[in-house]
Length: 527
Picture 1 (cartoon, rainbow, N blue to C red):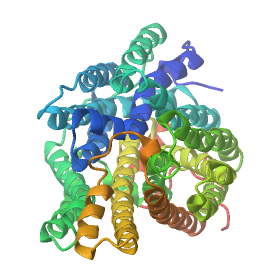
Picture 2: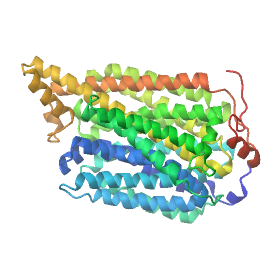
Picture 3: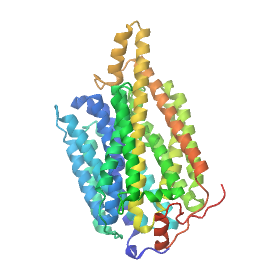
Picture 4: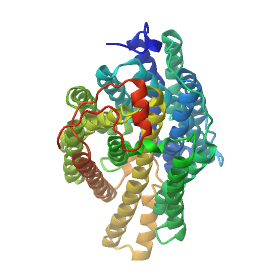
């Protein structure tokens, strides 16, 4: 194995460990707030929209700013941006944990969750670029499988850790990031990763367009559950957001030093892998939130017990992430991505079929199956996409893939959240009418309950019909996730080609990543 000159003499394992600690916070915080949401909302007196935005503001900031972070990583230096990102993230975490009670609580928490997203967007592209540059193509699949396996596992561990931390105080779900950040900074100082970078101007016009496009399109979907689809503001936000993203793409194609090198989408494999990532992430991140809330409301379990649902998902995920990484190195990305997407779809469908049983034991095997499918395909799709870039553009390619991933997660959270609230409200209205409550009063009461307003935080006090109605709504969400993963399987089956990539010289790889339609070092077989 031959390493780039800039990485010779380094301890590759230590560099990998340092980068895993650095990004650990970003993955944990994608989900840790989910399990604590009812407690945070009750303690701070947040509105239902406020607690939703406290979760999604983080994902939105990641989606809107990842391309910017990737660009900075390639132009300023990867190690520098990892350190800056870790410091911003840890500082914002401390301020989230210090959220004051009272009228300022909602704005404070949402704002600093967004700042956390900024820190993550700066840190993550640089961290993964360091990992990619440290390992050659033949060993990169295993290294990144370990990277994404542990990081993805931390996404799953977030709600589990949160379930225990909130027994002390919900603020600890943010403060836990501070010691992790200190360890990451110490490991970076010891391992001293060195990578190539190339100074270039920053495309602030593109940055403004992507922030507006991502923000408005997701805002429209998320607010639809509160405002209703009859409100024209919903359609206006979504349409303007989509148009801004289209303008962003057109502008970036003509910009000499763009925020995002959209020409790389001319590489068919890179484009297809990103479509798969967009689709799959609509299920992957939201599942942690919905499973956590399902466990607390439908199963009437404490947060610590409800978090075990996520542990089962994690067990399947982390095992199959390693299997998928080895398959990627040996036979390429197509087989693990297709098989994993299909397995995840089957797992979600079967899980949905048992959601209304209100017995966790009947669901465990299907939860593990869904997690196994996601582990088999997700990291491999991501790694295969990044491998299409040259060594000098790993940060940029990572910025693109992570923008797509987090945009998909935000869309999934918003759309599936709308389905959950709408179905829950409809189910409760029907139940109340059946109990003799007049229809107008039933609708008003259902709207309040569906927004989780007025709860005491005591899960044992949840009426049985509320539990059943929420389980039925969650079933529909899980069916939606199954459909999402089935769509990912179809795209992978017909869009990807078999074969293991060849390791090209940097100059050749640079040309391949810049010329539309040119494959970057891929040995293709027949479909």
